[in-house]
Image 1: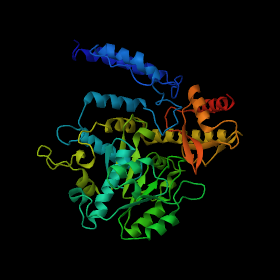
Image 2: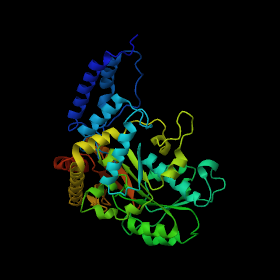
Image 3: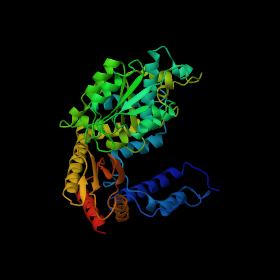
Length: 454
């Protein structure tokens, strides 16, 4: 029976390196999303040894993996892993540090330094306390939990200790909030129905701030969270954060800015004005496995009220003490060292390097949008502001949206996903990979042409 042995490390990691490089080198030719996946994985091998397990995985499953780290996986807002980020991620696994604790390792201190560097990168004030979490759902959950704690504390209610039984209903106002907001509300016991989706501007997904002002005037004493989108997921649109911040200050509402990918607009002088007012928010979130192009999973939640955040997430145990450990600010006690890939990216490429691939993706999205607009069978449904392109088949055409998407997946050159914009079936592309170039846009347009005439 094979057992784990230190002697395996050298040969196994060498083999793993070769397998990883083979996969990465084949990304330009790999289908962005393979068609005809098996219904399920087969039986798990049992005790065949580490090298045989590596070989078995490659033989059985690698062909069915997506090309998501590659340049034409545009269905979700997905980055790839840059060389520096991948190196950091591999080392995070090798070093295997528990980043939850300040004592016994430099891991938590490096996380603090990385958070500070990212806070500066995004132009956020030093008053924001930041911590690493897994992604949009965890970051939005942590932010809304902090908002709930702080808003009720102003009314003399400690929901972290006493629960919600004595608390008046909390309302959440938004224009086009991401689905992770709904999920967070369900997890926190606030409830999905607490989210009131207010009108958006004509032909846009950005919130109509006049509707927000009117709603804030209704029952002004009610605890309220307002969610702003900095890069709405369907079109890349931005809410008027500055006006929303002023309205929230006037009514005592909590302003949460979901900047999952849109916060990276701060790196581009011609687009950073869309983030005006974010410095006045109460909480801000951003996904790093999107435009920072570090491996899944990696995100940040920033809040102005770390004491309220700690009141929610602190872990009480004699062996933990009453420290400033990161575990007291997130849902997780056990935390992977997510900061290391981000630290490596910042150190390796700097602000200028990261800004360059963000700028390039925006330019390529505009190129793709122009290509869509030039095709008579397709209709661009919104301005390409950042990196998201939303389009549809023209009404009365020969095929339907889902047929087009099926043909595209069978073709394999580009992966796009369905959406609905103002009740109309549509298709969405999001470009956020450091590898993407003009040739990839041209290949995607050629794949669309082929799918339209198949």
